[in-house]
Amino acid sequence: GVEVYLLYDDLGCTYNIPTKYFKKLMKVGVKVRAFQPFRPFINSSVNNRNHRKVCVIDGNIGYTGGINLADEYINIDCKFGKWKDCGIRVEGKTCDDFVLTFIQMWNDTLKKKEVHIADYEHYLFQDYQPQTTTTYSLFVNDSPHDNESTSENVYLKMIDQAAKYLYITTPYLVIDHNLKSTLILAAHSGVDVRIIIPGVPDKKVTYQLTKAFASQLVKEGVKVYFYKPGFIHAKSFICDDLYSVIGTANLDYRSLYLHYECSLFVCDKQLTYSVKEDYQRTLDDCEEVTSKLLTTNVFTRAWRALLRMLAPLF
Image (cartoon, rainbow, N blue to C red; front, side, top):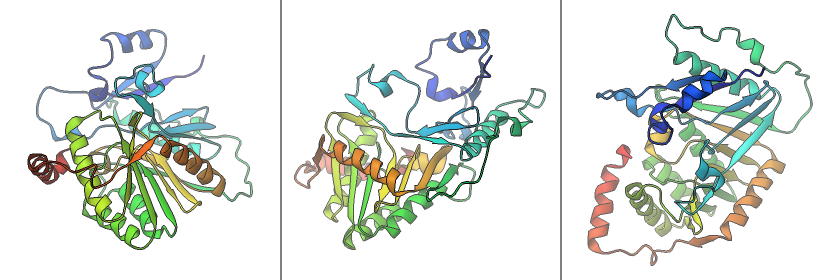
């Protein structure tokens, strides 16, 4: 008797889902919609994918982070080695933002004659009682149709205000001039800037770009680490034992400018310390990237230089 809504990105599922899978779900009562159904012709919107991960239960429990519904995320399918990810659970009034985000995207997939979710208040948190708290959170939504990247602005703000340390995890490190220069400035200012990237790539060309940008940052004092056991898919920022961001936005052009993304910015010492502890345990499985480790021949350097020019395409 539970209402179950499933919204999936069509292109992201094209090669991984059996043909009749969604029909089986609909047959047992699951309401299923595809976001941006793939069409075999040139269309600029084909790049605007739904990269958000939102799960909300009874308007009272919400989840977001890097975790998709796929076998590799729970290490059943280990084609990229051990998979490391990060997610966050919230309860209470904050879940309203999760609900509204989902309903907006769900309604956007429907045609005019189809039944939209109009009574959104029915799905919101109902038992709200104001409480004194020292925890503050902000649900960050990003759309390719915005004039600027909200996710990038949040990341830039955290880098800029870091005084002691800034710990980052990202599967892709394909950054623009603003992010690169701000990270370097933080490192030059004495901030302990650390970035964990995968040790095993899922996309080989993008991985060459990640190494190219890593090489530039390492030379400027940013500490970069390979996650040796496999692929790190977590997207997290931790700053000065106070601020943390956990969400879906990678440090690459696609996430920051082309995709629909979401993250949760939290100001809370206890949560940030918990995420920091996990980060430090992860560092035990990492190898620090050095200039010597990234030394390559002239052909590889030329290839990476070309890729940097084409970075917005990745």
